[in-house]
Image 1 (cartoon, chains in turn purple, green):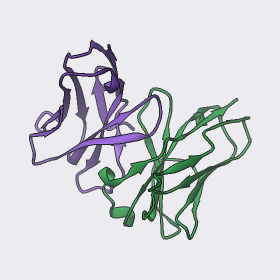
Image 2: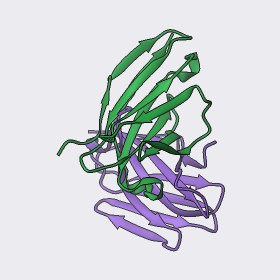
Image 3: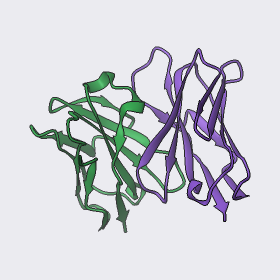
Image 4: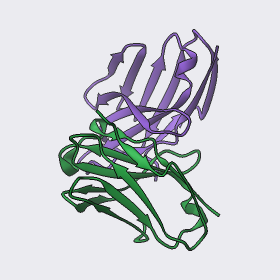
Length: 112
Length: 116
């Protein structure tokens, strides 16, 4: 079953605009990660946020986590055409194994 | 430094057949995990191999089996293929066995399996 669910399913923006994707999950987690996948290829890890953190930054990426609402958001600022990809959140449940659970992903298209 | 490699890139099989997919981990890694990603879905964990044994398994039937060789490379075998097995199969490597955190896994480009 899918633990995380990304929203929206698809997002289309112009270069230079910001892109925001959201992830909701169902059970308590230890941490949450965001991944990028280009054209159905391998996944690339973007950023990790732990359950006791509320916000993290990495370059043009900003991730927030609200454990009370069981949700996270990924913001990509000043988007580029090269950011076109699918973005997934993945979680590890609290007290569970290291088996990750991925959401269905958000497909982002950035028009030049 | 070679990353994770997978072969073949694409594969077409018929229902009922058997298939073997291969993965070579990133240099220095000793743990291999396999994922199935159906079209429009996120990856689903199949199983993980460490020290030539299956250490963790997701919710997949026994038709899915694997193997890890002494050089840490791995195979994923799927028997009695169903149309629903059509998917992108991803391999990820890491170091240190079942306790390896997800963010320390490196993913390969995947094998696209089509079952007709």
